[in-house]
Length: 114
Image (cartoon, rainbow, N blue to C red; front, top):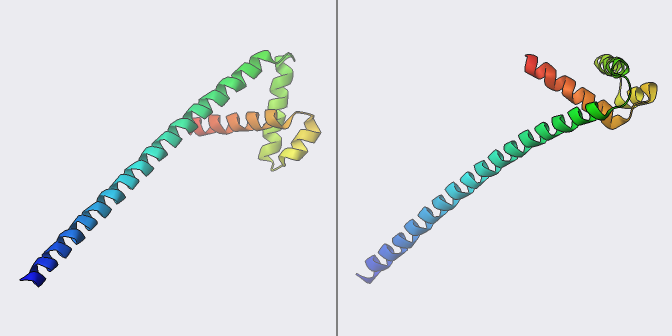
């Protein structure tokens, strides 16, 4: 009878352990999903912020707009031809962050068109 009681107690502890492990796995999975959702939300906010900053830079740019449009077109053309950013930067004498921003928004516009 003592052996049967010990087996019952061990079985009970095993069951409790398995249930605990299952709850832990479910909890970790839900935490992972929450983290992914938070990361996606932050990425969306970052994209909107970058777009806002880009628009502000456009407004603050003091050079004539026709010149800016020509530079943008040249940057996009050179990029689509497969030129590297370093070459574009040196050829057009435009700072790299501005080139990256122009290309990023070009890609974003292309993505929204499709």
